[in-house]
Image 1 (cartoon, rainbow, N blue to C red):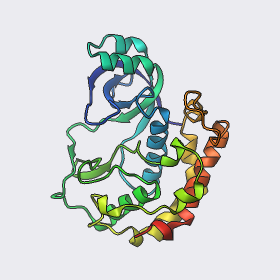
Image 2 (cartoon, one colour; image 1 turned 45 degrees about the horizontal axis):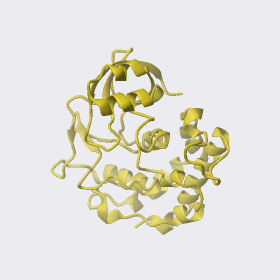
Image 3 (cartoon, helix red, strand yellow; image 1 turned 90 degrees about the horizontal axis):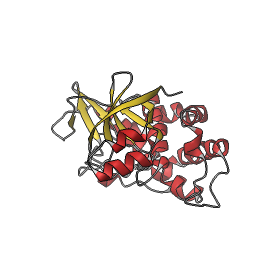
Image 4 (cartoon, helix red, strand yellow; image 1 turned 60 degrees about the horizontal axis):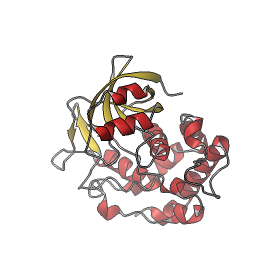
Length: 252
């Protein structure tokens, strides 16, 4: 299970992304980037953060540690910004905390990256259909002279409209838009990484997700969506396993 912490103070909003994450202090004296359930994509973006983050660690990609953070709506009411007030109040309860990397800077192409490291990131992004790792918005940080991958909420697009498993499995990936394509070739690491991403690895990643984030969304009915959290976990494993099996359709 992910560690569970409690928010003690809302420090500042991070306005780089559309979901308005916030920098929050917690009762373990840590500082975290908190992704809120009340943001535009709702809990599904947090599910993607957890699952893809777990897969990244399984294949030796650096990504910040995660925790579940309990947010009291009173923290939001103290904020002068009405947009922050509304978001935090709407997100009362469990949210996702991403370890803050103080002093990190955004990646640019002047930073030298080993080809194998870049290839692992490109391979994972292709597997999970990450559309958010371009030169315009790299979602990569340099921290202590190492590369860190962040922000995976835009992955796993299939869970926004269930169905079309085979279409997702075989859909091509737009490598031309990926910031690391020129550095790392995913084919060079495919055999090694595909052996690590087993159904058991996928199931372990899904076990980290709270049941409430996997339950059907009553505000967005989808007759094709899994009926309960257990069925949802099986569906995620099934979709990602099918995509892995169809690798020759999406590898470059």
